[in-house]
Length: 293
Image (tube, rainbow, N blue to C red; front, side, top):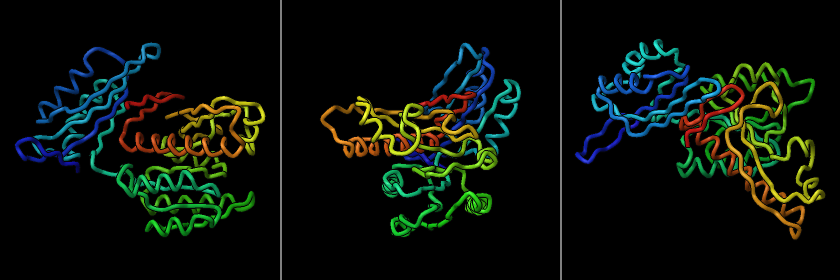
């Protein structure tokens, strides 16, 4: 568990509580009361009320000055969660999210994630890298990680996804990151991992679907290049959006320049989405998300 050192030199375990529920008076007061009764000190808190839908969202970081453990705190919060019909989750702030990265033949996002992971900038525990091509085996193994080559064809797709599912289960993976993995996951696979698969794509969709989107954007004289990170659902590229960013481009840039700018934006946006997910900052809100940055 996370331990925070105080001015007096003491260390306290730190936890993260996330919740969503119907919006009504008294939610924050009830949660705060329970934490006080359990000897906890709130160090960060963010709330959002969705007026139209009548939903309330909250993320709270707190220290257990009484040394309470995760199970004890879950039991304490349980009655308040039941009272307000909450979808509440409690996490150890120090626990890194077990993650699996999937990639095809474009490695800029994979390379960026591995670098951020090595320097401790991402609170994830990468269990392995999976690819349908052998191109990044050396990069993966050089980072001290297992590499799984799972080629796929229309005929072998069910067997390939079964093998993928076994890797996820045996490795204890909680987050799957599609770092330019250029295969469509089946609806069945997506349904088994709701809110646990993050994808990155260029923001030209739907205007520039298909191959070579940056080439087509260059032909049309696009002035903004962007990328979108979202959760994967059965509906292709329609999952809840986590993060987006854009960069301005101009007439003097070549197609290669467009591609380079696009790759930079993709890597940045995906890294942000992975970090925020792992820090429990992203809460589901129907077809959208609430992101407490």
